[in-house]
Length: 408
Ligand code: CTP
Image 1 (tube, rainbow, N blue to C red):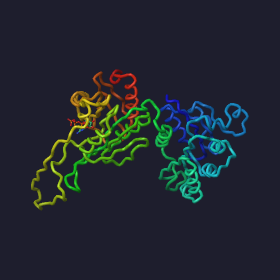
Image 2 (tube, protein in one colour; image 1 turned 135 degrees about the vertical axis):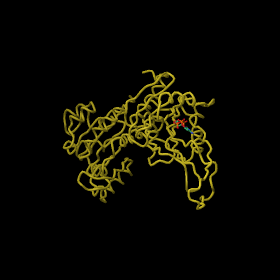
Image 3 (cartoon, protein in one colour; image 1 turned 90 degrees about the vertical axis):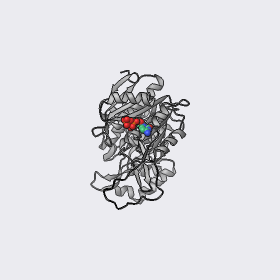
C-alpha cells in the first residue's frame, strides 16, 4: 500500500456506474477513495455500492449534523491527496468554474486546497456548447486538470465527444497526478528501460522489412511499472499506441537505433526486452527507390545482415548491468525448453515465454511462463494488462526480496 487517498465526487450521469470500477482499480494499486455523491449522482449509483467498494462512509449532505460531526466539509476537502470529479457533469463544471457553493460537492470544490481532476461526461452538444467551453477554459486557467472525454456512441443515441474515458485511463491520470515530482509507490527511485513494438529495417526510402508486433504487451508493462512509481523509458519501434501517461517514450525505427537509444538511457535498475527486433536488416539501404527490371519471375537476391541482439548485449554487460534483465521468448513449440536456453544464452535473470502458435500476437490476451534459474511458473491466461501488472509487482518484490521468481 502506498497510502495515497483521493476524494471522489460522483456526479449525476449515466456514466456514474464507471466510478465503481475506478474505485476498484485504484484500491488494487493501494489508493483509497473517500466518496461524495451528489443528489443527481444518487439517481444512478447507490451509496451502498460506493460505500462497499470504498470501504468508507459515503458523504451526501451539506447540512447533515452527523456528517459534519464526523468530518466537516472543510476537513473533507483537505483530507485527500487529490480531488477527482467523475463523472463531471456540465452542471458541476459550471458551478466549479463560477465558484458556486450550494451543496456538498460544490462547497468542497471551493474549499479545497488540493489539486483537482475533472473527468467530464455529457451529451456531445452540451460538451460542445460555448458555455461549457468557457467553463472548461476557466477551470483550466484556475489550475484544474480537465480530461478530454472519449469520442463514440452515446447513451442518448447521438455520436461524438462526451463519453467518460475508460476507468483504466482515468486511473492512469490519477496515478500521474499523485506521482508528482519524485514519484511514489514501491518502484519510486528505480529506473526501467523497456523495448517494445517491431523494428523497421529499410531497403530503400519507401520499403522496409518488419513484423506484426503490436507493442501492446511492452506498452502495458511500461504503464504498470510507471504506476508503481518507476522512472520508465519506453524505447519503441513504430506502433499505433499512445505513449502511456507517466512514461517517457523514445521513438525509434531500426534495431540499430533501438540499441543506441537503450544504451543512452542506461544505467537502469531493470531492463525488459519486449520488442520484436527484426533479426536481419538489408545489407545496404538504397539511397533512391529501387527500380523493377521488368523481368517477371526472375529471382532477385536480397542480402541481409544480422542485427545486434539488444537483450543479450544488456544481459552480458560487464559494466552497469541492470540488476534485473528480463527477456521475452516467442515460441511455437517446446516453450519451456527454448525459454531456458534463451535465459542462458542471453544472460537474462528471467524470461517471460509464450506460445505464439495461436492468437497471441496482436491479440488482447497472453498466457505465459515465467522462467528463471530458480524454476518455472505457469501463469493462467489473462489480459496483457494483467500480465504487465503481475510482472511489475514481481519486479518490485524482487528488489525487496531477491530471487522470488520461479519459487512458487
Ligand atoms: N531481442 C533483442 N534483440 C534482437 C532479437 C531479440 O533484444 N536482435 C530480444 C527480444 O526483445 C526478446 C528476446 O530477445 O526479449 C527473444 O527474442 P526472440 O525473437 O524470441 O528470440 P531469438 O533470439 O530471435 O531466438 P529464436 O529466433 O531462435 O527463437
